Structures are given as C-alpha cells and as structure tokens.
Length: 124
Image 1 (cartoon, rainbow, N blue to C red):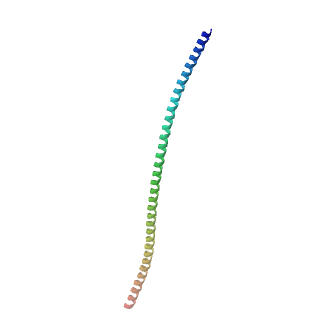
Image 2: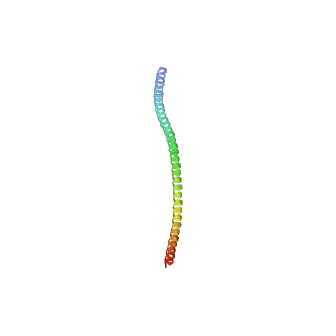
Image 3: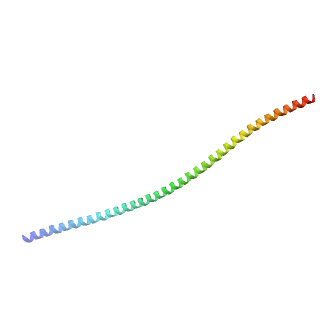
C-alpha cells in the first residue's frame, strides 16, 4: 500500500512538474512576444519622435523662410509706395506747372491782342 501511495504521489508530482514546465514555456513564449511588441512599439515611437523632430525643424525652417519672404514683400511694397508717392507728387507738380503755363499763355495772348490794338491805333 505504501508503495502504491508513493507511486501515486510520484505520478502526481511528475504531472505537476509537467504542468509547471508547460506553464513556464507558455510564460516564456508570452514574455518573448511581449518583448517583441514592446521593441516594435519603441521603434515606432522612436521613429515618430524623430519624424516629429524632423517635421518640427522643417516647420521652423519654413517659418523662417516665410518670415524672410514677408519682410522682402514688405520692403518691395514700401519701395513701390514710395515710388507711387513720388510719382503722385511729380504729377501734382506737373499739373501746377501746366496750370501756371496756361495762365501765362493767357496773359501773353492778352498782351499780344493789346499790342495788336495799339499798333493798329498807332497806324490810324
């Protein structure tokens, strides 16, 4: 009876050892799979971080470029406005000069008419 009990206990222990070995293998496989997933996630996040940093630096560079372009456009606009102001001033000056010339022309015409009348009276 003792021998049968021992054999039965040994069989139960062996069965328990096999079960625990299977659980250990399953746990190791699960650990390996989870480590692989973690490495994959770490690689993806690392790549995303690098992409984000690269995108951020690209965005910073583009912002600097756009700011430079905006400054250049403002300078061109300022130059054009100055040129337009100068042209408007020149146009006003030319208009004033033309008006003065018209007045002078009218005076010269009146003076000529007056001279013609005087010459005609002097001959008469």
